[in-house]
Length: 334
Ligand code: ADP
Image (cartoon, rainbow, N blue to C red; front, side, top):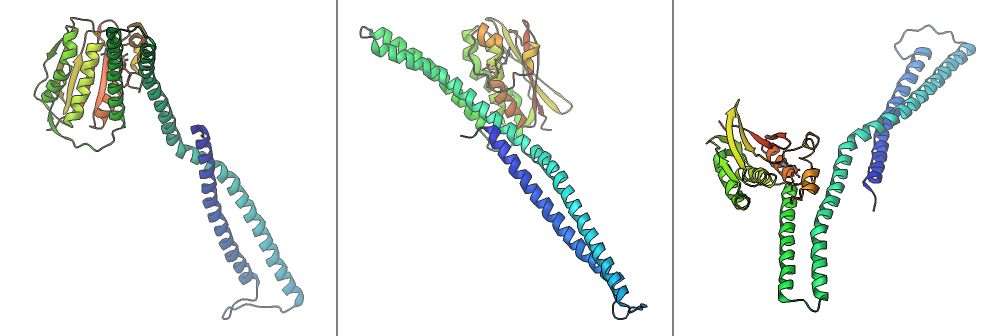
């Protein structure tokens, strides 16, 4: 299979040739029209003239030959000039066509590279739970002295991995979702309540309380997408916070923008990571290795996508060791 790089190089070359073909067709057609017009003009000014034109002719063979020579010389000079111009167009136009083709295809190349990276990252994330399930099942099958209890343990571990795979595939589908959404006035407190209800069980297992102070503001949004976004932010706030801490939800309207804030007292985000946390599959080292917190690094990229489709944005402020504040900004409905 061709690599994205070689596909891109081939496409650049083909587009360059097309641009050059168009340019040269115009240049050659223009040159031949110019040549015809100019040589007719030479013939007219140096030749015997048209009926009705008043000219004084000295009908001498030498003068006729001289005139013809002048016409031939002018035509030859014109041809060599036009050939030179066309050569310049070919060289200059070739370089320009190549640059133009590169610029045209650059966004496509970036998309192809990001797709390839995305597929490889997704495959990598899918592989780990599958490998765990495969090894567990193979070991259990080979163990002839295995008890019902040990089989149950394997099944339980497999079930956990299946839950993880479900979450991952759900999130991948959310990322791939391209269908149109209709923006309508949405009461942001309804979305916040629904998101809080979805996350309450995980919060309770960590004895984290959610202080929901979101007011009855109306944003121009898509209810389901806003609820999904807030669920992601609340889930993260719980995941990256110590037990018995508080997650606070607030809202305000300023300059026709509704802002919903999810604030936690968790581990915070390193300034170096802050620029990357919205990238697909990005996980800060502190959450990936040191603390072993579960996740795939897809939540925030989905949240950002959902909010940008509603013409809004997400901002973040965070102090490592103290906590983070994620703000969702959406246009107010009225
Ligand atoms: P995941 O949580 O599955 O790793 P996300 O895309 O939701 O993926 O988040 C990306 C990264 O951003 C996380 O791995 C974590 O390092 C950081 N992060 C997100 N939310 C918070 C938060 N509330 N507190 C601290 N770090 C966070």
